[in-house]
Image (cartoon, rainbow, N blue to C red; front, side, top):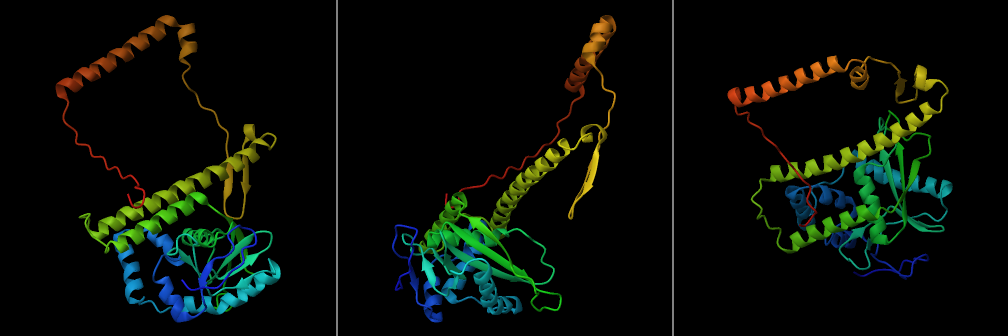
Length: 328
C-alpha cells in the first residue's frame, strides 16, 4: 500500500502504513481486506454472511447510508471536539485507512487517534433517542479490538451520545469508556479474518453441502451461546456483590433484607422448614428406622422388577451443537 508515516512513540515499530485521505483510494484499498466494521460479522456469521460481505467488496455495497449514518457523520467531528477538550488534547480526527504492519489485508479506519502516555484510537457513535445501554455492544467491542490489533495500540476510547426525542443533539457531553486490549478476542477475530480471506482467495467455494439458512442458524447459535455465557458470568459477579453487601448488614442473615436500586430491587428472605434427620431417627428409634429403610428398599426392588415385566421403549432424542474454531 502507498502510505504516510505515522509516529508510534511507545512501540519499537517506527511506522504504520495508511492510504492518503482520498475517498476513491480509501474505497479501493479497503475492498482488498477485512475492515473493522466487518470483522464482527465475519467472526460471527455463516457462509451467506461471508458471501454478502464479499459481494459488497467485489461489486460495491448497495447500502448508501440512511438518516442514522448521515447523522453519525455530521456528529462525529463535534463529538471528537468534545473528547479533545475533556479527555485528551492529543486526539486528532482520522480519515486514513491503516493496515496491520505484518498482515496488510487486516485494515481499520479509526475515527481518531491520540497518544498520551500510551497510544490509543477513538470510536464515536451517535444514537437515537431511547438508547439505554451503558456498556459496549459486542459489534462495537470487536470493532475497537480490531482497531487495536491493526494499529498495535494498547487501548481504545469508545464514546457515544444519545439524541433528544426531537432528533436534535442533547446538551450532555458524550459518555465514554476506555477499552483495554483483549488478546483472546483479537486472536479469534484475526483467525476469522484469515479464514475469510483464505475462502475468498480460494474462489469462495461452497462444498460443505449445508443450506445457507442452516449454516447461518449454526453461526447464530454460537454467537448466542457466547452472549449467554458472558451474561451468566456477569450475573454471577453482580450477585456476589449483592450477597457480600447482605452479609455485611447486621441482622440481615437472620431477619432478611429489602433494598432497591435504580434498575432492580432485592428481597432477601430467611425462613425455615421441617426436614427429616435420618441420623437422629436411627439413633433414637433404630427398629422403626430399619423397618422404614427395608420397606423403601423393597419398594425400589419391586419397581425395577415391574420395569422388566411391563417396561416399554421410550424414544429419546439428543441434539448436541459444539462450536468449531473458525477455519477448521
